[in-house]
Length: 339
Image (cartoon, rainbow, N blue to C red; front, side, top):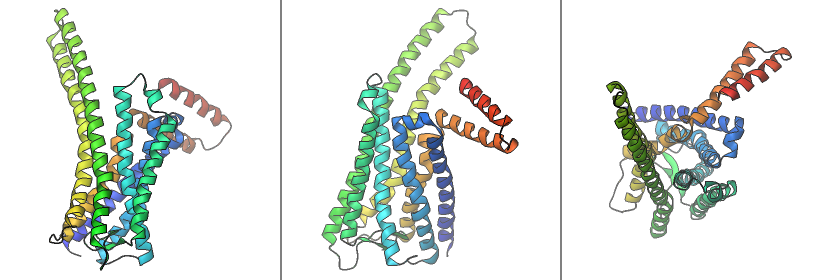
């Protein structure tokens, strides 16, 4: 292996470890928190984390072995299965992110009618659609034998076999990326920009009230005024930063790979192997960043993790039952009161 292959291998190992641990923490929160399970976004988050875990434990190790061995890591049957799963899981994760953005758009723009516009049943329907959508493309690729090992990406992925119908494969690839990546990106941009518009409107109203209050309080200390103005600026930047992370990470992680897959459809374009692996690694990095962007950095998930850790620590300190069971009950009650 050259230096580039060593770097790619180490990068995938780090991404796989972070992705597996973080997504498992999200599922742990979902299992231990009744409140998260009752909420509609929890359905989309669970589906996203489940897909990311499968990508981490199945596709990432296969790509790692392809980079190390410079050849197909498994037999044809296993490689086709991994290609099938990659096509299915990639499209499913993109549509799950789009569903999360739709949920946030309805929650922010239509807060009073959110419970009627986005019900638990509606969330299950959206998740079912993402599964059917992804499964249809995976089955189509399997039917036409477009699932194989690609040396360019060192992965078991969509690949046109020698002597295959290039026109059909081109149409399939364009439609697949148009209805997964492009559609999801359009939904993300529309919904989050609407959310940003509403957030800025509310920030402007708060700023007006704050400035009127500061104007009336003539005896207020200048440092207090300065802190209020600084908080106004942070409030405006916070909303823009979050929206930029959601849309920016989606583009950075998926766009290079999608553009590369579309470019290689042209007969006169050759894709460099190192660039192909880089674009593939970027898609894997999304599996590691999603738990932090959508779940673990939220206060609700942090509280659940703290509660779970405290329970585990109490079990280690007081392994016997009896007296400690009542102590656990009392501590749980105190934690609920504090939260």
